Image (cartoon, rainbow, N blue to C red):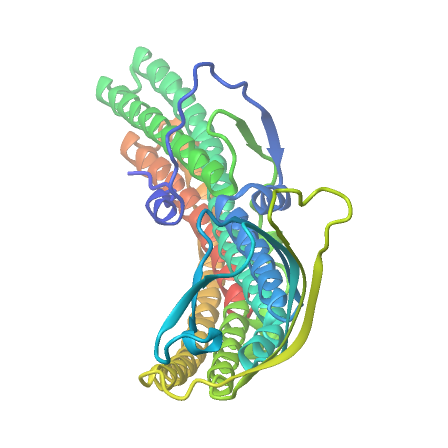
Length: 451
């Protein structure tokens, strides 16, 4: 049985969900020829997760504008027009006008029509929470940008793996084609030997069965590759109907360079570690914000108003009086008691900081484990590749010699069938080992923050 590299579509489906699209007309297909770098660039511009991460950055910038507005002056305009259908009544002590003490005389004051136009100003002079928000603006944007980098790195690692898996599968198809050609020639030779009495019909049937099995395996492999291409298109944000051609090849030259000799590693090289460090910084800003909420706030207020009172509705007539009122003031506000809400918010923010510290400590341990595992896997993958390469070369020699023996009548069909099977197995094992080494290299670079 021939084993092919399986495209990890299940893993892809957990990261990317393809929503069904319905249209009245079928969109035109576009043809793309991508190297691995082209695929990475395309994903950076089209992957949905990357687009959402970019939108999160823009959203944070808009949030920062909103925070900034808290430190800027607020100016508002107010205008009102009142028509007193009945003027308000005030009670005046009767003795003022010679009446009986203890009695009141109802009097109406004012005019039927009143209008006020004015501007109001408010400027925050001191608010600890606003000032901490201003200080945290850059860190908030950096936090979202780092989330974008973490997302891009995860997608980049997956693209490397799926891209080269498809390239390896394409190479395996070429190996299958070469072996099918060998078997077709062997079938032809066996048929000639049978017709000349040098082989049995059973020998010819065995070769035919092998050829049919190989052709069936090729169909299965081609179907698996087509599914893999759909997965890669989803991963990089390409439409399913577009045509994608992979231009890179999978070779041992991609493993050149002793990456294990570079042992200069810092946790800060990892983007996910940087992400948590920024989260910790935001937690610290939160604590300071709630600590400053215990302090009073101080605001400058001001106003400039025009007021007019008329017996008739002639506000727009010339010569009417408008009376001016203007003021400046300071407003000091201090919340004496709010049901311990401030204490709860401060305690909660401190707990969140502790959680983030625990996450950072755990991530350090995880990184140490990932690096060691990736290092061991890469060493093993390199050794496996060397062994499988030698094994494939040996299988090719054995098959060549066995076929020569069979053609001169000194070998059996069982021997050549076994040699053919061993060669196919060795070739596929070599390709699997080569792909495994490339993936191990990607994992090691990602683990050390150098992908």
